Length: 574
Image (cartoon, rainbow, N blue to C red; front, side, top):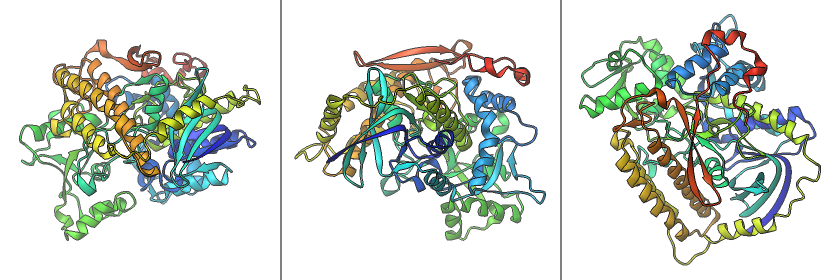
């Protein structure tokens, strides 16, 4: 492998929604700043927006406010979120939406020029080219972009993050990137559990398969405090194609079981996780499979639904065409996906303050990798990227000009030797072997899809033991190419994220989020568990410490309109 050392003022790790918006914001804040974005894929088609979307799911339509947005998110999350983070996201949702529209995003409008509502907190868009629009804006902002460059580890000197080590697949190059400040926007983690589809279709999943928890794993190794990994996200999706169900629901689809019963009517309160839980329970009790039934809709509405899916999940429409499906009797089977660890739909990620600073000096986090603020979606990622970038630029102003004159020769040698040790071994394990073992362990012992996502202490303890054994096997991994080396790195990341996940699942002795975190041995929600389960790896002894953080309310929902902004940010500054 070739080696190269780069220096930059601000390094953004990940070129998805949060990373792209952070880069543009930083350039706006300081036209002379040296800014670098590294992206494991290609910035034109990376992250959750890679294939496009047909709606912005976090926007405040007339009548909605940042306070009502917080109320909705907190209610849907059974009372446990970081109020300060969610509220600050709510304050910026509409502003960032209008901003990306000015960059070229097509937002659908009515005859009076108003955005077309999909719900009180979402609007319709033509978003197939959403990611290329963001990438074009980043390039126009004179940002250095390193595509095909995967972060491996943070550079930590004197307890401060000072850059990252990275692998460039295209050039077969080991990068040492020194940075005064780093913003992590790498997204969440997929592939920890056995996916719905196997074989050549195993990457047909809800979350991007190349999101393997790199940002989480790097933070865990460096001793960052993490939060709420136990709130896994399980998407309710159309079977096989893993197409989104939201478009069907907003079109008027009814969730029914095999007997035609609208089983959600059994519940007085419907949350996102409960829609999944109810479906899983119908299947578990022999009343499945379950469907989204649109047979009662008129043909025009069904055709509009099909058109809306073309910009987000064309495979669904192609399947209908291939089957010559009669839209007058449209009914699609639904099921849960594998569990994911993600901070955008749920709230797994770095424990951050209101400025999006992590507990590691020099490191910020935004988007899916940042914890505490569920249901932020793409516009929430924009807002967090903006906040992180502004805070990072302010910090940069306080650092000396010679800050990057660091002597890290030993750190570079250690990381290069670690990475290169996997290359060109005559014998060893392929990454896919350990990936399959990991997914099997998590599927059976940590509440996978075949277990109806149900968790219990004895199985989780077994998962802990087996993961410990599996991690010991990683020293025997081998790679012959840079691409295989990346696969080795990714399976190590997934194992390390899984270890933390299991400890969080064990520690929370209640069922806070049914479906996402259903404890068979602790089936009830308890007031005393309205608190955050956090963790931190003690680097001096390599042991994981669980930390409880209390929930802090910003007051009654009705009082938000009078809440003083200056006081608002005090409670969670680290």
